[in-house]
Image 1 (spheres, rainbow, N blue to C red):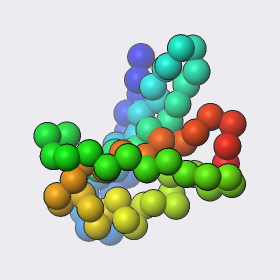
Image 2 (cartoon, rainbow, N blue to C red):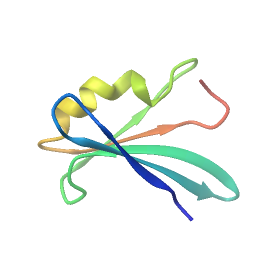
Image 3 (tube, rainbow, N blue to C red):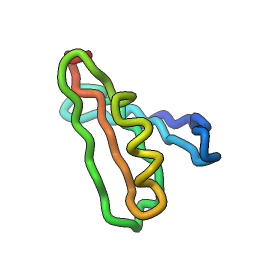
Length: 75
């Protein structure tokens, strides 16, 4: 089952955090914006995590549904 909590950004928008199980692996996902909007997916590299895209996600959140995941085993 996914767990969710919200983190307030500087623009009063909320980041939604979830743990999603995929084939037995728990993956942390972060979203902002409205799900009915076009999606932009962010994938980080080593040694970063989703926070590398935090400011860009806030900027895109009015017109897009921004999704970032923490890749398992990286960061």
